[in-house]
Length: 139
Image (tube, rainbow, N blue to C red; front, side, top):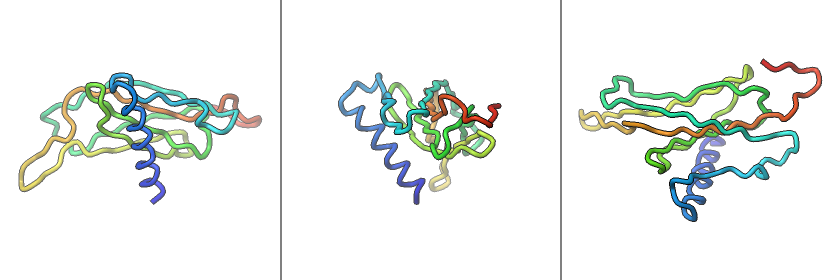
């Protein structure tokens, strides 16, 4: 339930800026959204290509967060041609890793439907500690 509410909120946050800004500008996150002074948002942008003849039904975005801020999820936004097509948030595991699976193909009435196909831009937002807490180490 918590993840569903977070996904709905994330989707809403994604759509609000696109109503007032051209879609090509995307949604930029304001650092003031993070309440703690020692936490900052890092944004990574990666390209993703899903072939039209993909045999796998799922795709995945994964990575690690160095000095992850406890309690903050990773937010993943996927765009195609500057328009948002998918948004999700996922928790950071104790080892700093995260992963988010999403459906690439589906089968409806014995027909394969390609949900994702082509080139995409993936924005990944990570909450990190500006300076590590004394007594902790970063990997």
